[in-house]
Image 1 (spheres, rainbow, N blue to C red):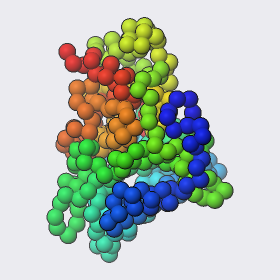
Image 2 (tube, protein in one colour):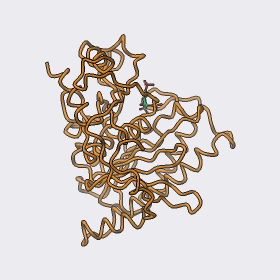
Image 3 (cartoon, rainbow, N blue to C red):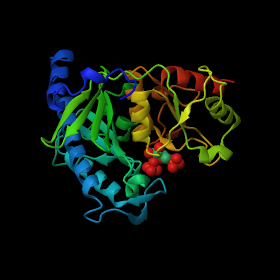
Image 4 (cartoon, rainbow, N blue to C red):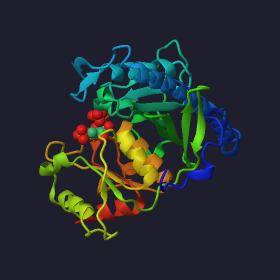
Length: 342
Ligand code: FDP
């Protein structure tokens, strides 16, 4: 790790994810019943299973397309389906959720009547970056937890259609050279690496602070002809000396949001998926993608904006609401925002 503040000697403390969240609960909310803690353990379990399947996917011939499209009009990979199913099956019976929403489903997912209803709503992208699966590039699961706001016997869409600033917990799991889980409940951002020999996530990145400024810009420049003028000028500024650092940035773009985000979180930098003439509202989804990563980055000292509005303040209008996303180191994001103010 180059420059994030949780490197070197602080790494590999040996504390397991289970111990860590139990200790956090004891320290921060001693009177809590442990529902959120328990929910996180179930998410961790689902992530372990998804991680295992992504690793053996090529071997068991489950790579490739299902041949149909999802509600976003994109091709669905078999592994997307599998990850979606694992998340639902491992979380619906916990008694902690009132409703779920997945990037792969048009409507919310109700908790079956035979299971208890809980105080939280979960939104997730089961397998982000899935167009990279066949090339063995890092992909991930992103999740966001909101407190229930609806009354009645079951949860409703209102429970997930909340502003990002109301999130009680958010994070992601990357399935890469190692499997890494990063989460925040608003009290620091913590990263854990799966030790496959014991099957436990061990605290490897305690209290991640993202550098105030970075050297990296991450954007799909193949879309440049569709960008508006502020975006074109901004990216030119990153590529030249016409930025506040007076030095050109380095380009890094994997095309797997979770992996691009995680790298920039640790090294410092900025990720952009701006609106363009093909996607006038941006491509990325507010609820399962932008909000959880914005909650993580803000808790690590960074920022996330649409260009003109803080991501966590955007009022979701529908489940698959899309937004332009500019996210990363504080000074880089502030510099980017200045291009959209006029
Ligand atoms: P993917 O379509 O492969 O699932 O939100 C989806 C996403 O990937 C992000 O992970 C990624 O950052 C982005 O789309 C890549 O989009 P482009 O291919 O248009 O750059």
